[in-house]
Length: 137
Image (cartoon, rainbow, N blue to C red):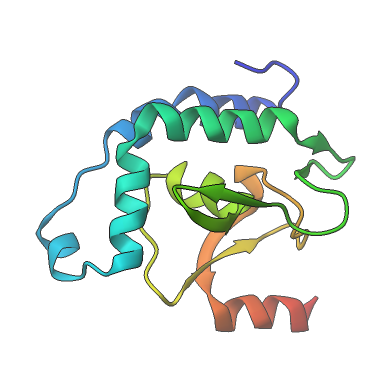
């Protein structure tokens, strides 16, 4: 466990393995399976590798005074995972919570900092909600 993190983040990390390993495809998943959803499921099912990637991303991130963990300096960090380019915050949120996004789902930043990969600052939403967040800010 990385002690330089907040207590909330350390709790999230403590249960990371359990969340990832508890993932199971169900009947609804099979009915709604798309290429993208299958990719995410396979990623989560590679539990040990996925957990290690998430922990490494968080450990390498730099803490800001606002509590963000920034994984890049200028742009949101993109990473290559299983042959696909995704944002680091997507890996942390979707795989770290063992969730499979649909085509309309996005990861929203409660902190409004797209460089942030702190799972405590990330939430699930739609593109419209994301646009509204930007407008309202």
